[in-house]
Image (cartoon, rainbow, N blue to C red; front, side, top):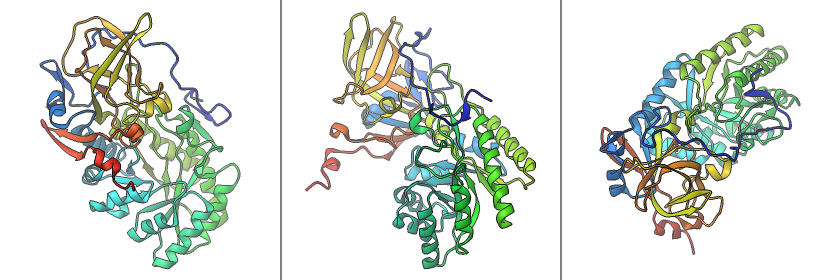
Length: 460
């Protein structure tokens, strides 16, 4: 069995970085093409993204600033759509969603996963076809479920017995027959951080396979003629770089498919193996090729179905980070620089855990570069920190900047397209940054920068 996946047990994850800095890169100016957006380069020393110079972006839009390479984002949508031809690809909106991103997803022909009434509202506001939307969530309120049923979303993933009863009531009330999937916790854990490992039994999502709860969920749904049970759903975690866990998950889901067929005479036509595909954040990180993922998952599902004597179900996957993550870069302006003799230099920027909480929350690693110019100065071991009143307010724990880094320089952090804006907050009353899309040298705001008036609005 792969070292990247194993039956879940007490050891949920051991992925926090060890306390040792990375080696200094040979060239502090290079942009690793596996980490930076596909259109990134340097021109006259400055980083350009989508043909736009970061200095011009900052002059027009300020800092901190989320920058999204539209062509990178769209091209990764196309990569997944092509690789999973014959199945379904649903973008996981929780990674990063706004109205413009919903338009991109719609135009590229993907489906969309939403987890709340708010995310659903974003999608519907731009005319996203509801039949291409799946509603997730472990605690969907009656109001959220009603909005999903009224809108006619393509699938609702049932996550509790209470939810099944609510769906039955709402289907009767609105004269609809929603398609329902069962979220199954299959007892398989991808090696990832404890907070983002989602398929072991001791957590909040889904119905346990081992306890019989998933089979009971199928009984209750099939007992309600106003609901249409169409398949099973599983999500084993995030930042996964190996498909072995999916093989174990699919095998265990097959046992439930067989049980449902034997007990109820029903063959479920769909299988959703979720997402969680990893991306490289720092040099040396690996991420599986999209086509390789697709080929492996198709082979896994086909083999498992044949072994169980079942027709091969339609496969659905839910990439989020894998589409949005590398398309995004965050720009900051350098402020205070403090040298702690014998240890490292602390480089403070004008953002921090309010615009990227992942380092504090997960111990996430990132790659950062001096963005507004090139430098041939010696490497300087640094810690890139934010401006918040927390000692754990770090953007990049350990990295190397050129020793001539100065106040006013611009720095760029790669791989921030997923779960940075989505998790952004107003700690210390910092307004959330703007999000700009860049393409063919042109930038446009797709989420405006918050103001202090926004922070005060609603307060009495």
